[in-house]
Length: 423
Image (cartoon, rainbow, N blue to C red):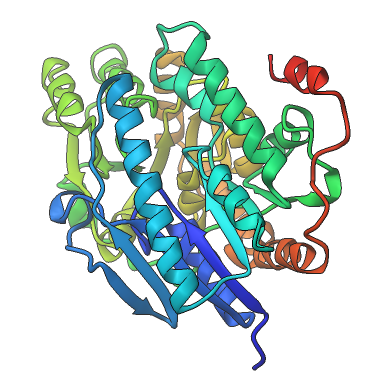
């Protein structure tokens, strides 16, 4: 097969292949005839990922170059040092890859929105730039620090985002809300913005026979899957379970929280303070096999993500993964959560822990409804949400940048108007 082209994918925060979106994109491009190289961090050894990554691997014909990166930066100075260090290491590795393998296109995945400067350097040599928009960094900053008001850092993040949009030849977004941000705040042309959803993939998620032993003798098993960060709402879930136990008087359940992350220890401490040790298990990061065992055996899955300017516009991967197993979901009412799950979920009033507990209690005690929602979930994944449905949009984005990457995706509007849109 003749080569379709050569692409360099840049990832800042998660090692590949653990970054599922990037790994699926890379494999889809490889199968379409692209030569793919990836730059990413090595992670913090075995602490979070269960293995020590090599500096270089060639997996499925994909060249993966990894660098050691500092983790858990704290404070503004710490973040600046981390981003500067990672940017420099990425730049040096990009020179090596350019010399050894070559590339025609750079795909940079955020956060952070800092690799537009690297892309501008390579544009002098005729390279094209695709921005793979994973997160709304300005809104994510406010979600991580809810007590802070928009200030200089927020303004800086808006500027970095705007420069990334303006530099890109093509933008790929994860949902319609992000696409609207690209069109309005980013000033991008509509024919250069493609929605490439994070759909579940059957090569990783496989339905297995239920294992009653995982319930530890309880009637119902509730599962949460995801990285444990302060903006993900696990504290809302724990307080809702406290309501379920003490105010609703229901104790015949077990809630398993699957995943690692920076808030694991603090959430375990909160769980102890709430007296929920008999009802909650923290597994840490599990293998894909064990994740499938739990999701195949549980009765209900939950996403307690609270509503804010970031979460309401973002699509959580876990929702689609729950649905792939035919599991009904309890979540807060969020725009993109509803667009993903539709009738396969039960929605609580945003950030209302008691209503979340009530919705969970009602669903646990309504088996016919759980089965009906589960069937809706699986059908929706099969016909619309599975990763295979996203591949044509990915390849269309790459075909566009190959055919005509010379034009900027940004409309010709005055800089003052861009500034107003970003306010």
